[in-house]
Image 1 (cartoon, rainbow, N blue to C red):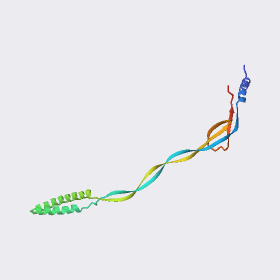
Image 2: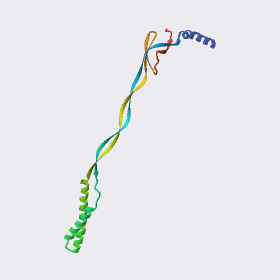
Image 3: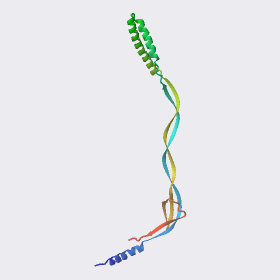
Length: 174
């Protein structure tokens, strides 16, 4: 039977050569250029815009009882003049007053409907408008560097200066 110590020794012996061959270290590469990158960001801003506008108003006529009263008086007088007997004059006066009052009310209503005066006023009218705006925002640096005779590019959050620290990892093939 194989002991646990033998198995762990065997695994260590098998892995040691590959671990010894794979190594990782840090070096410095020469920075060839470092250019800032800006993104265009669009957004909306609500703003209030106001303007002067002419607005028409109808001036309603006040409800006057003058027309029905005058109609009732004239109707009553006419009804009284038509009747020949006392009882006929009373009935004629009452009927004439009711009929005259009704006609006067109709005339007043028609005058209110068609006789309204229009008044014009200038008012400030405001509304909210969403304006589209855009601005340039810093997004990082486009960095070009050289290491081992090869040229590379990367994007970074900061300007690396004249040298860039790189990780070099050597791994055996095969």
